[in-house]
Image 1: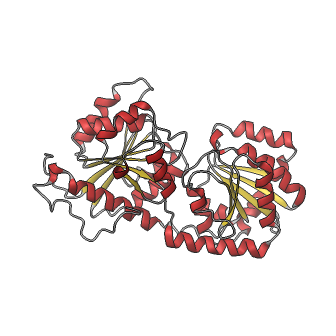
Image 2: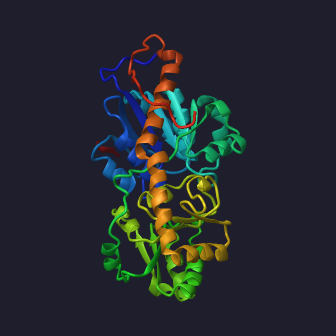
Image 3: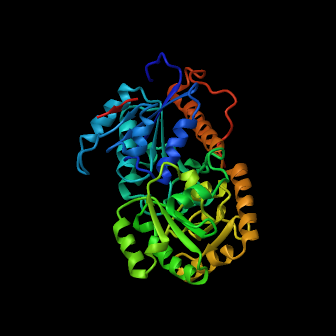
Amino acid sequence: MNTPKPDKRLTVMFLTTSMPVGGAETLLVNLVHGIDETLFAPEVICLKEPGPLGEVLAQEFPVHANLLTNKFDFRILPRLWKLMRDRQADVVVTVGAGDKMFWGRLAAKLANVPVIISALHSTGWPDSIGRLNRLLTPLTDAFIGVADAHAEHLVQHERFPQDKVHAIYNGVDTDRFTPGDKKAIRQELGIPTDAAVVGILAALRPEKNHELFLHGAKQIAATVPSAQFVVIGDGPRRADLEQLTCDLGIADIVHFLGSRSDVPEVLRSLDLLALTSHNEASPVSILEALSSGIPVVASEVGSVPETVIPNETGLLFPPGDTKAFASAAIKLLQDKPLLTQLGAEGRQRVIQHWSLQAMVAGYQSLIQRLYNQNPSNSTQPDRHAVPGTPTASSTAPINT
């Protein structure tokens, strides 16, 4: 049994590798910010460097970083064990697969943490589950998928027990991501006010398939002469992708913005968002665009069809099909009334189903329920009680 703490809140430690600017990392920031601090005390563990978002989060919450020196640094286990014991963790949530999922759960078990949860965010790399991580399934109280189809994938393909799998939908701040003025960012980038602007918001990594986006951009521009393209995000593929725009002869109409702190404003400047990934679960970029009143053209992968609904919030195309992507984008860019209608419908659906408040409530409910069910806490059922918490969907300084 854990030693009683003066602070009656549940200490919840979210464990990840690092926090660069990306979809999963942004979700974690929003979750930590949104959690009820009268009931829960959130902390973040970054096995490696904190990254830009970790640095920002550390201004308000405890962030522990630089615990892992290399892939074969087995001292990570005693370091994590000591940290979890010292911080008297009540709940550990590993975010993503790989080393963090393995070492985080093993250390939490050795530290007698009452609740161990693994949250996953995609249906392939980087969240494919290896043999070692499957071996720790009995130590895990819950696995979280970000959409219904993603939860089904975790059961059918990753072979996690169905009674341990929960769907908690990704959520965005609908007060921050709103429709608005398109002119400011366009003026900054030198894009004409009346241009047809297509954007992609994704880390520049191979699985996001920016190559298809750029090849499609060339086809779109041939039919829609005013078209310009915005690439939001950064990553290891940037130099190769910039070279590709030169090879395709479209460098003058493609704008690489890198990581931006003003993503809501950038999204508002678009007419259409594209997602061309090889695999996804429920991308937060889609929700942010729809919340901003921007329809989406996306590859039909993972749980994307739950948010990109043909002729209601956007259009889908077969993954890897450049011609189909370009045709879908052209159809919407040439039909302004339809573009506006899909954007308005998309925002309403996000407000109803994929809000930040709903995501936070889902995590809080699941955490509290699992904590209350833990036999080691049965002698003190009122400790950290959270009265009236809704049910989950479907079912400081940086330490160096």
